[in-house]
Length: 96
Image (cartoon, rainbow, N blue to C red; front, top):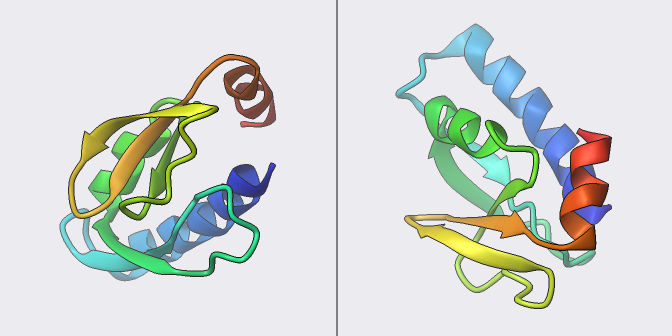
C-alpha cells in the first residue's frame, strides 16, 4: 500500500513535468519502496517513469530499497525497477 501511495505522488510529479518539460528532461521522483520512513528522491526522465508505469506491478526504487520477499529486481539503472510477485502483485494491480 505504501508503494501505491508513493506512485500517486509520482503520477502528480509526472503530470507537472509534462507541463513544464520534455520526455528527456530529468526530474526528481519519490522512491516507491515499501519503507514508511523513506522520503528519498531519485532522478529519472518522464520516459523512464512511463516505462515503469507501463506495468501496474512495477515500481521504481533506489538501489537496495527492494523487498525480496514480495518483489524481484528486474532492472538496475540509476534507479531500480522492481516487480511485485504473488499476492502483492494482485493487490497493487487492483489499486492501479
